[in-house]
Image (cartoon, rainbow, N blue to C red):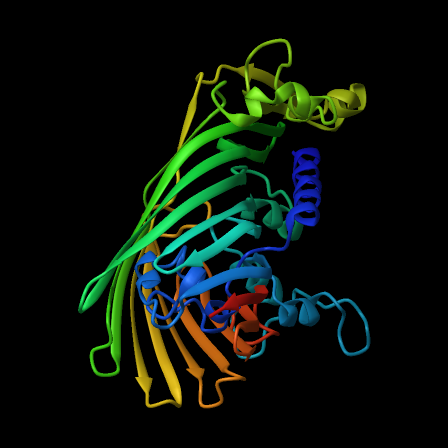
Length: 455
């Protein structure tokens, strides 16, 4: 799987440098994505397509250059790393067996308690624009989306820090998800006197996905030796066709208030691994330069574009004597190809958004969003997330933004952003902290900048 991850990251970098930078509206990032009501023009796509109907504010918009990167984990912060992994004041290794001041826990117990029960996770998210233009209450958008998340079981850290205690069983469940999809969307809004409604219809052209769809088993040390029945099934596919639909509603200003609601991917699915997609139809030309099926261990002597392999680690009564007698077979790994359906159907995660905003004269705008996913995978989380943001607009040429959020996949977030807005040109930059309210305590960052033509 390590080789596969490296291949995906390399492919992503190649695509990014060839097509453009990552698409994101840095204004939305600066207000912690409390953007269901205040997004305008092409920035409304992905949040609330009904906002395309505010043509009195933005008649036309186009992406010139955008960049965003999201990188996170769910355990390690800069403060935690500096405290425990750079030595004490004298540069000596930290004594983890000492109790924390004012606590019944040792430093080692505290570190282990900070790792979530479902494991240590790291992730990366990027989106790459192709063409993004809005004219009036219509918009065409396209881009490449990449998502990666890996999780290691907490038990691995317990073994390292506590040792493999006799009679104790350690869970071996792990997860991996890698997804790359090209999307082409057409959006429109229908304005009414007091409100707008809007929709986005997206064709999802799957490039590929790979992941562990089932894993489990345990590892233990018994009086007779080491035992394990760990397993994981690794499935991958290239080429897919799918469809997604976003729906949105926004009120026009009621005094200085405005409200909106949206559901992204209310319909969303991708069918992978069949012959009816652009990658399968062009596989000869693609593999003349890149042996993609060979990389992903998909048979090239058939019309298959998906594969699944079951990996197992079987240990039974492995002790010092047996290890010395046959050290090559101490850890017995087995792999077996298992059947996959002709077409693998994947639901594209849906997200619900409810938002409101209040504008105080021409000084500032306060925004709030309440959101949650319908599923717990890829970029969606069923945990409710509340975001509150503010934008100071007294000097229109140099707006300043900030926001905070609670709940969702990261627990807490904080953001800061600024921009330079000229007559027909907007330049914005933003930084969002994930899993913490300060740079020292954050467990991830999201950085973005955007350059847009607007009139």
